[in-house]
Amino acid sequence: MDKESKESFIEKNLWWLLLIIGLTSLGIYFWQFHGGLANKSDEWDHFGSYIGGIFSGMAFLALIAEMRANKKDKKLQETRYQTQIEELEKEKQEQDKRWKKEDFERTFFMMLEQFNRKLNSLEENKYIDPVYSMILESKNFIETRACLEYGKDRNNYSNINQLFINLYRILKFIDNFKWLTTEDKRVYSSLLRSYLSRKLLVILGFHLCYRKDNPQYLDFIRFIEKYNFFEHIGLSILEMEFWRKYLYRLKDYLNDESGERLYCIYSYMIKNKTHPLSMTEEVKFHLEYTGSLKDRLMNIIDNRISGKEINDDNLISTTSNSYFLQFIFLHLLANFNRAFEDNIEYKDIQICYKLFIDKVKEFYPEHNI
Image 1 (spheres, rainbow, N blue to C red):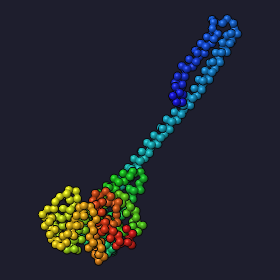
Image 2 (image 1 turned 90 degrees about the horizontal axis):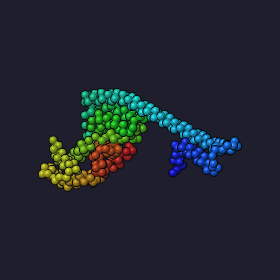
Image 3 (image 1 turned 180 degrees about the vertical axis):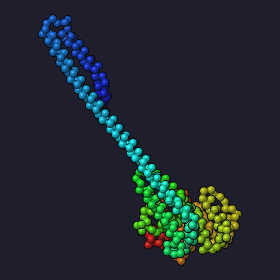
Image 4 (image 1 turned 120 degrees about the vertical axis):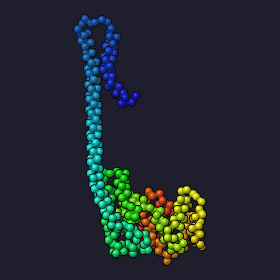
């Protein structure tokens, strides 16, 4: 039995212990001096002195025990009081947190409503599609940006940029609000992201590419990366557009007016990633149009299906073919990584197009990708 258990036992059974001590003391006295009741006063004096000493000691023990009990009760009361204070403080903090969150949501949804109105205005005035098409068909990234910012299409781009300014302010408001958990911030940023179409996400990526050396854009880029804003950007669609332009520069064998040939081959390639299937007669038929380039194209398809680097020396190692390094598909992959983090296609695409991405980074070293 440890010390604490012993003290607890004594405190609980104190009066029984005192009674036993008293009776034992009387028993010892009568056993030692036996006989009947004394008829002499001095014997009664001796007996009184003996009993007085015993009871004085017992009283002293009782006093000490009572003092210890009072001290323990006081400590217990203090503990209860402190616990009550902590519970009240915790309840107050929770209440403050609820109030702060309610204040946040009022402001957030007000900002979101303004954002949505601006977005509807862009769609009604058809500002988005012309800018998206221009970016997709870009033959030179820097020239395209200059044209959008200062050329004849600057009005469309300027109106979209106003939306991006609102987007940045909302993201900053979410990120700086200390009362939100990390998970809460991801929820609100995901809700905000859901308002942006795939085309607007592509334009946003174009808007932020090669801006890391500009302090005005650093926080915006950090928010886009932190909250995985390009998760639903549609990488497979951009990849198919890359193929369309890439293959067109080699030979226009796949660029029939409907795009059926490219779509057929691309669909076979992507489906084969998760559900292995044999090449259909239709795919073989379209591949026959490639002529002497068939083996080269098949190598690209096989690498894409198996998740290996696409190594096309005829394209990548030729500096005169810098046109192929202008596609927004490659610019996005070269400039951002965490922004695609939750995209299930990103990991494979990044591996397959690594040599292309590296070439883009070499081509734009002054922009500090």
